[in-house]
Picture 1: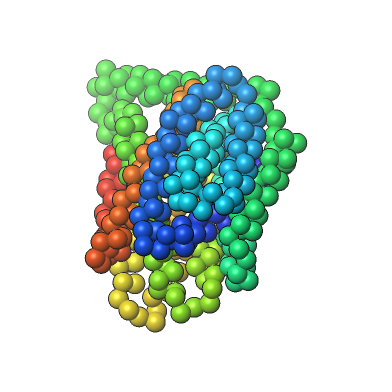
Picture 2 (picture 1 turned 90 degrees about the vertical axis):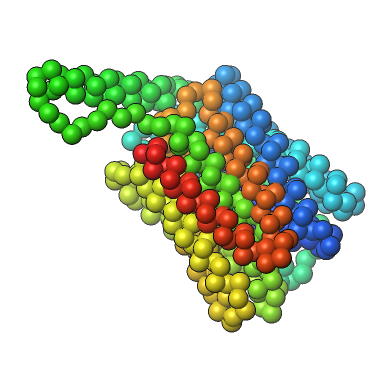
Length: 401
C-alpha cells in the first residue's frame, strides 16, 4: 500500500512530461524549442546537488517519510503557481520549475532505501520491478489523461490543476501509508556478503596456485567507475533523444487528430509496463550485470532506426511508434537492473549518487538535444548522436561486468 501515493504522483508527472514542452512552444513559438532545452537542463542541474543532499540527509537521520512528503507537497505548490498569470512568462516558468526540481528529487533516494530495507537482497530486483511497473501504469494513465484533455481542448490552467490535484492525492496517501523501516541493516549485510565472497574467492584461487593446480579463473572486482560512466552515458543519450522528441513526433503527426502525440507516448509507456512486469517474473535469473550493456546497445540501434523517419513517408508515425514501444521496454528492464545493482554498489549515506549520475547525463542531454534539433536537419543528428552515445554506454557497461 505504501506505493499508492507514488502511483498518483507519477500520473501527474506523466501528464506534465508531454504537456510542458508543448506548452512552452505555445508560449514562445519562435524560441520554444530552445527554452524546452533550457528549462529541462536547469532543472536537472539543480537536481544534482539536491540528490546528494536528500540522499545524505535521509540516511543520516534515518527518516525517509518526511522527505517523500516534502517532495510531493512542494511539487503540488509549484504546479499551482504555474497556473498564475505571472507564470505565462517563460523566465518565471523556468524559475518555478527549477525550484520544483530541487525538492521533487527528494522522494527518489528514500524510495530506493525503502525497497532495499523492507525486502531481502534476493527480492530487490523483483520489488524494484514491481514498484517501477506499478508507477509506470500511473505514468501511462497520466499520458492518457493528456490525450483526452488535449482532444477536448481544455485550457492549460485546467491541465496544470489536474497535475497539482494528483500530487495532492499522492501527498495524502503517502502521509497515511508510508512508514519508516523499523530496522535498517539489509544494505550493510549485502556489503559484508560481497566483501566476504570476494575474499573467499581470493583465498580459494591462492590455495589452488600453492597446490600447483592451474586454472582459468581470475579474481575480478567490479569496475564501479565504468558502471558510473555507463550510467551517465545512457542518461545523456536518453535525454538528447527524448527531450526534443515530442516536438518531432508532433511534426510528423501534424495531420492526425489533436492529442495523438500523447497516444504515441502512451504506447511507449505501455512498452515500459510490459518490461517491468516481465523482468519481475524473471528477477532471479542470472546475467543481470551483463544485460545492462546489451540493453544500452539495443537502445542505440533503435535510435539509429529512427533515422528512417526523417524522410517523408506515410509510414513514419508507425515506425516511430514501434521504435518507442521497444525503447520503453528496454528502458524498463535496464532501470530495474541498475536500481538493484546501485543498492549493492553504493554505500549508505551516498544513496543519492545514482540520481546524481542520471542527473548529470540528463541535464547535459536536455540542453544538447533541443540545441542539436534546431540545426538544419537537426533531428537527423539528434538520432545519430544519441545512438552513438548509447553504443559508448554499452562499452562502459561491458568494462563494468
